[in-house]
Length: 186
Image (cartoon, rainbow, N blue to C red):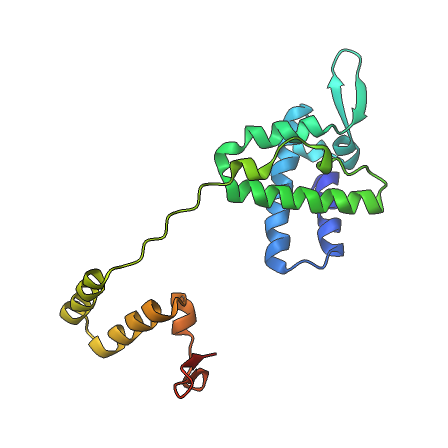
């Protein structure tokens, strides 16, 4: 494991993030480490914390400077094709890492100085379409025609349609969760 990988693991161990968030951040931060390894032309095993903080920008004179916001901007621009969710996840992971580094290692948090704006890449919201009465009746007729358990499937469909619940929320309902006298699900 690279020194940077050890630092990533130490950061994640010291954080009180949820297990799934830690795994997601770990994946994103290793992708960033791969980017840095290509940028400095070193194998990922050789990327260490000082290379994150000090990145060569002039090969002839071997001048080192604090990691520049431009490097992070270029990283995001190079990965625009991965989509908004990936970009948001990566920005969150890097932001949390750099906050950690600024408090534990006296590294400057350069993320506030980047020009990349996540909001500029947010996809347009999908237009929500509401089924009309005829479409609802067609769906119910399809359930009646093709279902092996018409009663259960119709109940499921009507519950989904009338409550706006997600499928797993409805499927996980127990009898004790339904208060029909008040028309309430818990």
